[in-house]
Image 1: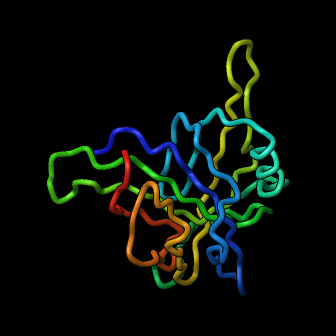
Image 2: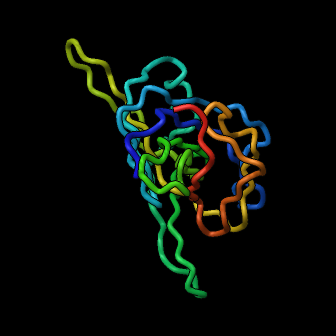
Image 3: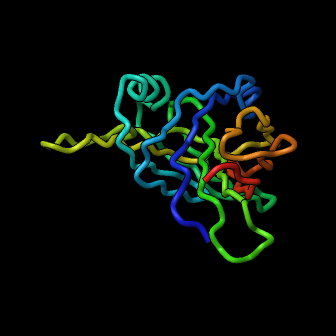
Length: 188
């Protein structure tokens, strides 16, 4: 059981080596969204409603959002492994979204925080917003999963030590592009 989230999503550089997405060797986020109203996550895409609108967000979207229409490619390989990947003309990036800590009564789950890691490409309409008198602009940030052909390693230093602790790196399994974890939570 979770109530809300930790109000943090960090985006990182990911790059491709021979067509394989890899997590950044530097673990300084490209941008961190910390004024989130709602985060919607599926195993194939994400949408973040937030009211953080500043030059840093504009620069991030300018650099990483596709300039041409995104198209999804999904299906099944001949060995039965399913794939779903975006084919937009944009760079693969990685994101780490921190959920809240477990709020249920099972003592085995006490102090566990849900964390979602995704390799993705931003959607073409990312950054769309409305201007209305007396209200914040709320640029939406969203995208689609990029499946990895081999295991991707996420270094410990990519995680916020103010929110979670872990003893070793995390991996995104091959052909997934997405992983949900329950890590030891720090803070609220």
